[in-house]
Image (cartoon, rainbow, N blue to C red; front, side):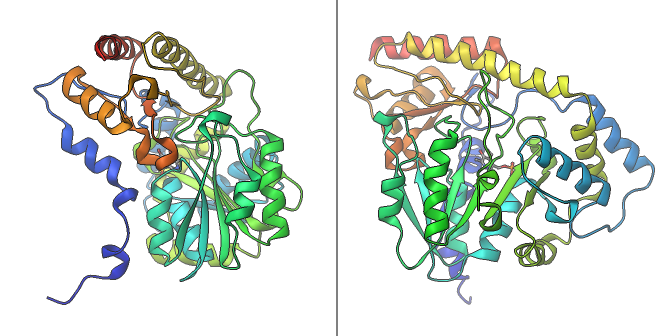
Length: 389
Ligand SMILES: Cc1ncc(COP(=O)(O)O)c(C=O)c1O
C-alpha cells in the first residue's frame, strides 16, 4: 500500500485526543462523573431549536451563500460591534462549523510550510495539530503558574524569530480560566505590531466571564484589526456544541484567502441551523445571562470544595467552564492524579500536563458539564481521595 500523507502521520494526536479518550473510558457499569470534556450541561434554549425546526420545515434545505446567510452575518456583525467592540460589516464575517473549522481555515490561509507559530502554554491542544498540518512549527511560550499564568510579553518577544508568522491567543483561556486584562493584551499586541505578526484569536468563551470582568477582544486594540483573525462559536455559552456553529471575522484583505479554504473544505455551513444561530443572537439576552450565571454558581461550588481538599489549591477562574487547581502539594504528578481519580474515585478529569509542561502539577476540572448535584458528588469523591494521599 502507498504511504499515508505526512500531514497525518507526522502530526500529533492532540487535535482529537480528548474525544478519543472520553470515548475509550466510558463504562456503563461504573458511575463515572465526566469533568474532562468541555461539554455544556444544558440543552440548547428552545427558541433556538424552534427557529431551526421552522427553517427546516419551511424547506430551507438547499445550498446557500458560501460565507453564510446574509441576515445571519448581519446579526453576527451587530454582536461583534456591540459586545466585542469590533468595527465589522456583515461582509467581514464568515460562518463556520464551530470554532474548530474557523481556526483550521485561519491556519491554512495564513500559515506556510516552515513558518513558526507561537502558542502560550498551557495551550489548547487542538491548535497544535492544525499548525503542524499547515506545515509549520509550534513554538511554546511557557506562562508562569506562580504569576497566575499572566501573559509574559518578554517571554513572547524572546520566542520571536524571523520565521515567526503568528501568535495564537485563547482568551478567556482554556485551560487556565484566565480572562486577560487590557494591559496584558496590549503587551502581546505591541509585539505583534512591531514584529509584523498575525494574531489568531480563539474567543470561544467570550461570553463566559464572571464577576463583572470585561472580555477584551484583542482585535479591538489599536492597529490590531488588520492583523487578527477573531474566532467565535455558539458552542459553549448557548449550549450548542453538537450543532457545530461558529464564525470568524478578519480584515477585508484577509477574507478572500480564508473564504477560499472554507468553501473548498465544506462549501458552507448547514443552511437551516444558521436560522437557529440568528435566533440565539436576536433572542432574549436574559437566556444567555442565565446560562452564564449558572456556570458562575457551579464555578463557586467547585472552587470552594477543591480548596478544602488537602494538597489542593484552586485559584478562581475569571472565565471559561474550567477550574485549574494546583495539586502539586499532594506529591502526585498531574497524570498520576488524573489516572488515580479515574480508577479509585470514578471521577474523570484531565491532567494539566496535557496542555503542555507548564500545566504540570495541575488538573483541569470542567464545572460546566454537570449538574450541581453531580458536581457535589464528584467533589465528595475527590475530597475522600485527597484525604488519603
Ligand atoms: C479554546 C477552545 N477552542 C475551540 C474549541 C472548539 O470549539 P467548537 O466546538 O466550536 O469547534 C474549544 C472547545 O472546547 C475550546 O475550548
